[in-house]
Length: 308
Image (tube, rainbow, N blue to C red; front, top):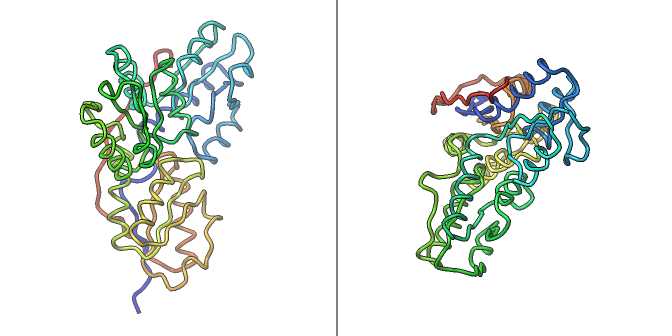
């Protein structure tokens, strides 16, 4: 009988945008002291948010919850233009933790609008990144969440269309939607460089390799993390049992019965400490050894805002 083995995807866990966002909150707390207000969860990971809350970060959904003169941090997902304007009008001290790759999409939408184009936003409507991107312009932007939406879209000016995508989508799903749009609107233009971020692409590619070898895959990440959910879907679509777990306590031992090849990865907002705990728990349950698979080595680093 084959001895159990834990296969560890590479890359996994934190990306440069998440590391930057967390560091912005930590440095603001160190420099200005608690409380530091953060509009929306700075990144979508329960453990990260709880850790920062314990140190004095206060997470809010609306600027009306923040007192005058306070310091506020915009989450990695970005905010609508109206939120930026309100913060400036109230004289709040602002540090913008929006991922630079999300900011790139904001710039694209504004440029399209300035060129007289209507924009198509491919993404999940409930996600704050989509809210932030669509809120960069007052009108002339359509939300497309899936292939059915793409097939039903009725823009006011079909010959003057351009599209952008949420940075954390499934690469394959986004490509299917773009293909439908291109068939329906042959003149539609897209970004010069793909909007789906390097970290999302790399982690999805790594999961595809992982799913070829594993009999079950665990994705460490919170339920509200878009990129973590996409990783689970990518594995499941390849016929592998795949589970999204916040931490080791979420693992049901029943899921491991009869499984000798156990895959582990993590979403871009999951810290390495959680991944280590999951691996140790799996080793305890199964006696498995650990083998890290080959993959892309990421070296991207984003600078902090001025003032930190």
